[in-house]
Image 1: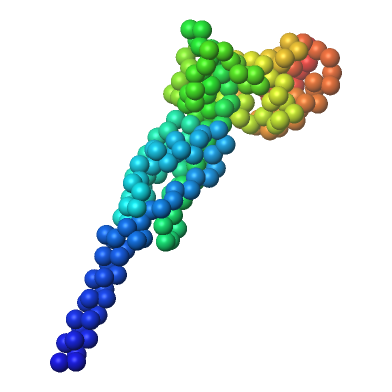
Image 2: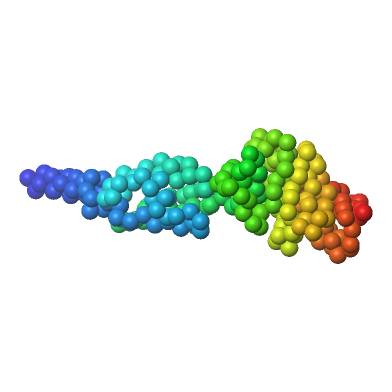
Length: 218
């Protein structure tokens, strides 16, 4: 008799605990915290997450929420985790504006993956203008040009006004003072940048660092 009662009591406790965790709003989502966002409003992230208030935290599909947040075009990646008793933590990595593509009177701000983050009526200051024949994520020239820009040290990146690429091996940088650096491909970008910064101390119109073994100044 006592053993049976203990079993019933144990089942009751387990059932109550299961109800509390999976069905009751007691351990529901009371707060969604957002971190990692600098330009993207937290409310947009919470809206994209699509988690109702007081939904049992244990039943939140973390992968589904992560996918919703990552679908925001300003977001490069996202992570989602539970924090008991009632907090859902969302951390985003925003896409970093890297260059501008001007077409049809509009300026598209793009990231390192050639994803358009936003479109404006005019190019924002501080970003180089990208010139390629066929802009797109699948275009080798586009990928090479963005890889070069993304790998530049700040001492050089801030001086670049225009980036051109006819092929993946023919990237060139035009500086704000009119000088041009023939860069070649995206490989050895750090080494090329160090060489370019030293060469820029010499007054010239064109600097060729496409080969780190043989550099020229004209």
